[in-house]
Amino acid sequence: MADLEKLISNLEQFKRLEPRELELITAQSIVKNFSENEILFFEEEYTPYWYFVAEGRLKAYKTDKSEHNVSLCSLETGMAINDIRVAKSGYEATMFATIEGISKGALVGIRVDSLPLLFAQIPKLPLICLHGALSSVERYQRAFFSGMILDGTGKVAFMLANDIERFNAMKKQDIAAMLNIQPETLSRILGKLARKGVIEQDSNIKVLDMKSLKEFYE
Image (cartoon, rainbow, N blue to C red; front, top):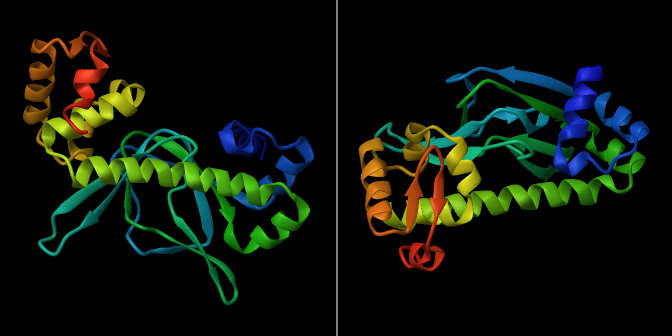
């Protein structure tokens, strides 16, 4: 139980809670560990818990009519991985996509049917959850914009300009899968941007000319 409470308290949206409030949430929560390449949930699957990424990284993808996997975005610490909606009986949670581990890690799950009680016990919790959900939606919107509208160079440039820390933390093959391009294409694009003096390639990528980088997607 102590480990679960520590995982919850480390999530950005719950850091403002008092010890007693964390205890109340912990009593209604579980830890779900996952490993690399493990499929945790399938699209449209109902779950009794509202899950947040506590450690590690996952990816969300959908399967098209030809049974091809279409990568949507990566899920990182603090992000909610399933949808919550109001139902006749209270709240219900469903998966908006298939969820698979990129690395090993852990999820924190809060019982969906306990949310009305927790909201009553912790008055500031609804606003905290709203902020957390909006933050996740913003990340999804960024991923959808870069993945559905832009060409390969635009996708890479958009991620470098808006999320370079995550870019540098991920494996190149995972970045390519997330952006729906081939790893070889990613390498070529990075090489082109480096030759143009827009970025510098070392152990990490550094942006040297942000204005020129943005021109690839604006």
